[in-house]
Image: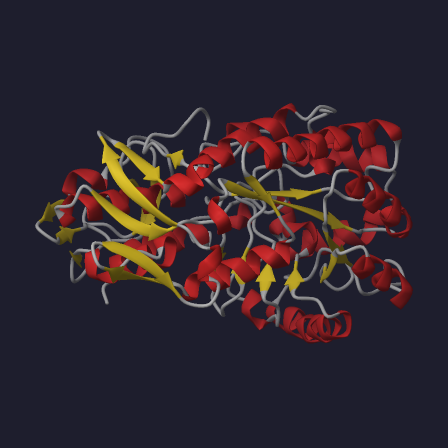
Length: 465
């Protein structure tokens, strides 16, 4: 099966019989670099055209070299390489920032506990200075990989000779989008405040995912874990000791990964998040979890730059489901941006909803123990409550999202007379949607019983997305 069909089946779960054959150059010469695929999709990889090592200057637009015919498409690049280049951050030179030097990172995290909070925050602001001038990924939400998928699906529709193509909708029961709330516990004070934070969640009918640090930071009593489970929440592992050195070198990582996997079994944890959002996509496959939550959609305000450029879950090498972080962290909002409102969160929610994506939030019990921060957090939960009631957003546990995404990946569309039906375990939760072109807009249509979940997309970015 060609890479175009493979990608479209992965993302849309559409019938393979309806997809075109795809041709790509047998040999793509030249070094990998940046180019465009239409006005709104920056790509990285090899292309039958000019690439640039940076985003400076005008980029070659590969859209002009696409050729399509009856049930066939010729692309000047390998679409899998391009999508993986975005979602796996192959484009990112993570070595530009000081803390990406292993020696500097080790020294910083060794002295970090000795630094006053105010001084540490000042250093962080200096370190991240100029973050808002980065041209790519696009702040505050980046959907570049999703836009590439949409443009490829649009080409499939054009070549099919049909007015629309069916696919299995992204979320169960026709939900427009999804939201998850997660709490990373960094300190003993945060651990002790966690039950109170879960009380606040309960007021708004929210079940959350709790990430615990297994060693050094604080004890993790069985009674504490049992209380979390009894509240209907889930427990995940947050690194080993939160010292910032998990990915310092391969040997260190493998040693710690073995211990992390043991804690996963001990805690019954299915999910993982790396401390400080440090990550190495290829090393993560050594971890024995069902899903990961360590990769931001856009990482301008994280110590490690980059971003996976998508607001939808996807598979990592090794098979873990990635649930990307798609909104700003509470610590960053309060202490880096000096913002004690939910305006940015609301903006991100709107942009993600337009992309029918995953709204993932990190709120640390360590940083919302005072009345001011709690007031902002309550406003966020109120916004999620309204999104669930009025905007058809599925508010779920991270583990439930992983389970659905894996279940959806096993479903298939089969012809049933002139229509289509979904086969496979969990098909009763799934919805058949249709994609069609309205000029340059890719429009999603759902049946009347899921009308409240209907959505539309444009191939041009909305707002700052």
